[in-house]
Every structure is written in structure tokens, then in C-alpha cells.
View: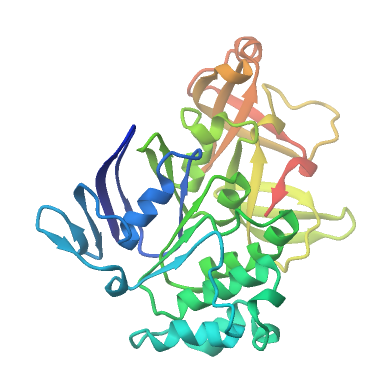
Length: 356
């Protein structure tokens, strides 16, 4: 468990944040620019000494202002990856990786495993100037991992990459989440990175924590900022149940919900994460006699929130253990007589569901 409670005053800005994080998976710090995400990363890393507070990993303090404890950066065993890779230009990829390793205490990260995990084998003899931006970031991640960290901090590592390079590196970051029992704190303000990578989300604004908890909850609560974005969507973790070759559809199961999507290239029992955009969910009180969409899900209303920016209502829907989100007009809420506890059908086009 990672425990953070810090307060620090700047001219015109105060960081006052407290939360606890799980000891594995990716925790994303998310919020608008200037909300304090990178400052918080600096405090965890030891680059900033806060005015007050405590930071601990598994109960062992890295910083405790009251007890006058402040472990220096080099003794925290915290790996750091920045927006720019900060590789040594005079060293090859292998040399940069070994730089992280030779200064590290004994640990479980082995060069061969990290090279395989990040797909670095074809790059080992190259210098940083001969790498793409995505390749440089993969090397920077490898170097940080070979320092044998207890915690990996990533401060907007994809912010300087274009869409193509982000798509190149995203699968490697997903592999970090699935194959390593290492807690990762990841800073971003890009929603696509949150949707694809986050297990836990810390939502921040103006130096304060608005919410800390599972991504699925953060995305589906109408009273939180993620649901009030144009790209609001429920996030579900599901399993490939079967492929229907004749209909060219794939059936996904998870959390008591079944979804049909266009056929995907994954074997049965493979785990997937899907986005169900709130604007694509249609609500109805009866099953239409003839309709093209494939997904008609029986739900009940959990809550209704006002979305003033879009002149809309956000309807939280419970189906099994899953929560969906629908953005509809206030008129639709009135006509369907929606209220907490009321049963309603959620109609979702298979083409509207994004398999991540």
C-alpha cells in the first residue's frame, strides 16, 4: 500500500492531497494542466520536500515532516520516467540500460526479461539519436525498471509523442500492467491513456483530490469530471466468450453483462477492456419490434445527474455488477419517467463499443 498525504504552498497555489494506492497495477493521476499532478510526483520521488505531510510505502516512511524523516531521492528506490527520455546520448541502448542496473541494489528485474518485455532486442546497439520517440521512451522505462524500484513514477511519458508513436508504445505500457507486480503512478491529462492503462484513478483539480478509486467507478459516476467530458464512457473489463463466424461477431461476457461487438482477433477466454460511450447509449422502456442494434440490456437507474455544460442528464445504469452511463436530454428523463430504482433498457450499437 502506498500512502500519500502532503501539503505544500506555492505563490498563488496550494497542493493539499491525500490518498492511498494499491501495491500493484497502474494508478493514474488525472486532471487539467496545473492541477498539481507533477508536483505530487515530485514529492513522492523526493524532488520536493513538502511543507507538511507523510509519504510511505508499505508503512515505511519516505517522508514524514512531523517526525523529521526525509529519505533522499537516491535511497527511495523509486524509478522515474519523464516526458523526455533523458537518455545518455554517448551510450548505446544497452549502455543506458546497464547504467540503471549497475547502480541498483539486488532485485528481481533482469536485463533479459526487461529487454523482452519492452521489445528492445533490435535496438541494443543503437544510440538515442537513431531511435524514434516511442523507442526512446521504452528504453527510459527499461532503465528505470532495472534500477530495481519499489515504485515506478511516470510523468506524462507520452505527452511529447504524436498519435502514431503513442499507438506504438501503448501496448508495452499495457504489458507492464499485466505482467509486473509493481505499483506504477502515471501522470496524464489524456483520456485515451486513462481508459487503456488505469486500474485506479486519482482525480485532481486545483491541488485537491476529488476522487480516488477504481477506474470503472470514476468513469461511471455522473457527479465526477470524467462523466462530464464530451468523451464520457463506461469502462468494463470483459472476457471473450465466443466468435460467431457466420455473423462476424464476438460475444463478450463480464460483470453480469453480455455484449456483441464486431469480430475481434482474440482467442476465447482472452481478457479485454471496453469503452461504452455515454452518448451512444439509448434508453427505452420496451423492446423495439425491429431494430438493427445487437445489444439490449436490462438495467435499473442508479442515479441521475445534471450535465449543465451539455444541457443534458447523465443517467447511471446498473446491470449485474456493471455500471453503464447514458447521456440523454432532460426531456427524455421526463418522458420515460426515469428515477433511481426504475427499470429501463439500455440499447447499444455493437459498432459503438470500443474494444481497447
